Length: 89
Image 1 (tube, rainbow, N blue to C red):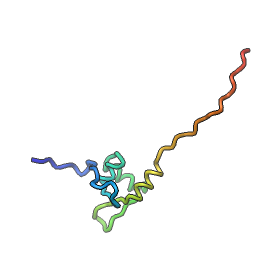
Image 2: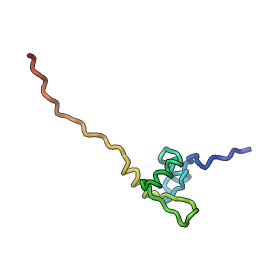
Image 3: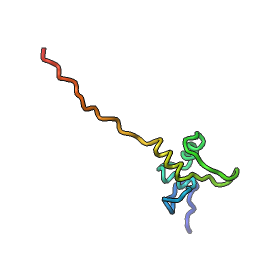
């Protein structure tokens, strides 16, 4: 008997280049949980679309790309100039 997967379990999207993803697929793409994706949406960090109240929530590929760019970690510039060594007293 197959087990039923929890609605909170992230799932790999069938098509990684699809124009829209559901919450479980977004959670898999962002490597987080579905409740975390819901918190990002509620906080306004991740835009989404919903045709009518109670219907499925979808996140577009463009919104995911924009979120990734906005939250991407950038390396700090490497400091090349060194202070001169202290003279022995």
